[in-house]
Image (cartoon, rainbow, N blue to C red):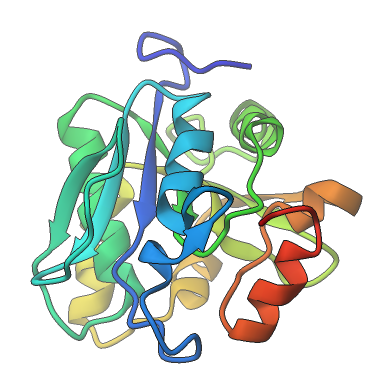
Length: 210
């Protein structure tokens, strides 16, 4: 399923690349991955499905702009991933998209098929008063994966209010939203695997990545 800008569930892509990568010991966005970088790999998957992709980087972070993506700066330092999500959703909303498929830069096993499956959940999920869920995200037998799925771009305003109140947890924010959880299994579950550490990278490369 290719989601076009004029469709009822018009969606762009957002990749959160502004993390500090402490557990990896180096910037994950620029790590070599399958003949490209980890960030380029994620962007390429989203570009296969979506008309525009925004990459969110921290202010001052040196991240080369991947081909086919537009860079967005999270200009609020040290307030966690919710501020990065807010920046990406604002960029998508300003460009006219109701939805954004949000991925983290450390999800290099993501596939176009899983992106399509999760976006199909937009129509299948529980609705709020506006007729659509706030977010659709992947679950794989546990509590879910808040960095793999779709978010309504209008959530940017709610994120700002939540962060100003002192709450910065991505999962905690989604717990207060109307969410449709799509349970993934097998190879699809691997698609939303986070590569946080060198051991994670070795495990992920065991699936044929060089």
